[in-house]
Length: 489
Ligand code: GLN
Image (tube, rainbow, N blue to C red; front, side, top):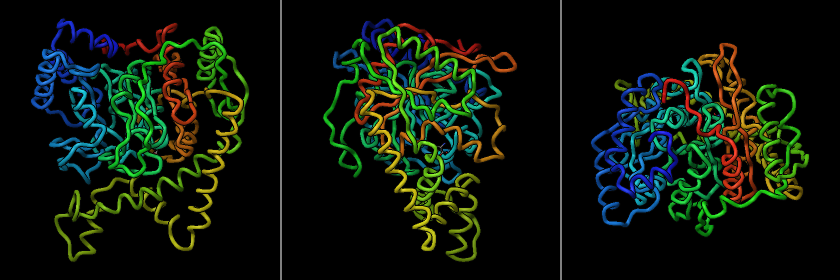
């Protein structure tokens, strides 16, 4: 059951081959067995999950089920879920019980999906390895001594280890796609504004976007049908008409023009990763796609631009954690100012503090023009690069990450090396474009482990259905997306 697609699981439920309670119990049992090794889930509540499953069985029996009714899913702990502990990976929110549901949670609840639990993540979604979580590292199921990527590392390991049927994540600079590449599954960051951010704990509001993390493009399409949609409670939600993301899955790729940005194949790309991407390109040629060379001349500036803008937004978003309105409050303090300072000093981890310091600095009166304003201008140039590129092609392809999963601890002392994990993903967020990563093969580590490699597919605005079609076509002729890590079968 654990390696079945969402469609197959849904058919099993519809045909009464298995009930949602049984399916949920199967995943809960796997979580009990494997979670101690990978630390993917940080909050579980079997009673709540099973109650949802029981309700789903009622809907199935009544004949009013929709495709995700009764499907057990993992939710990144960045989404507020009513009566569930919602920590965002931080000590600051260690005991916070959400009083309401995020829009994403509401949509899955309406669809009758089952919440298996809340998944581990980098603190406030800041990180590329899940090592900044207050709740400890997550281990990559493909090699437990390596990171799963981040910030959606718990959801990533849960999908890869088959500890859920599918999961949610968020992507501010790469946090769905980078872990998808490192853990070997399909992840989609939608067009900015397509999925509501209501109830999703804010990191960098102009970049944050929620999306599906699942085995296949088809699974992601089914999840997008539930997640996407206008929400007046999010001021940046776009009033884009509802789409059926499964409707174009089977279109032929003949004549599809794919752009290969030369900047994504330059120095710094691991040779094994490059080989896997070349093979994927060859496969796409067989499917009828045509390739053209393109350039994104300002792509090289995306990391510095992001590390001005994202910390700037984070520093204001995180000012609400003052020990009064939300979260941790120091036990002992002298006066109000001391209480603020001690609460924040104790509640936030090092990476979060680093971002708050950078953000406060670039927004300060003397430096605003030199850093923040300049970065905003370059952000526009980066978006313009894509606009120009899409005059020559329908879709863009390249590697998702320059290398495979690295060892836990390998980059913790070098924030810049960590930031470079997102060198191919961040420009998409800055431009607000949709990006996806699909499993495209493996690279052998020096100690003989198979480590997954992801192919990135970048679409134009609202082109998710086409991207999913492109992913699905490849997954019909390859089976990388069905591979399971040894020991988790
Ligand atoms: N790795 C990037 C960062 O640390 C992106 C994180 C994300 O997408 N949430 O900010």
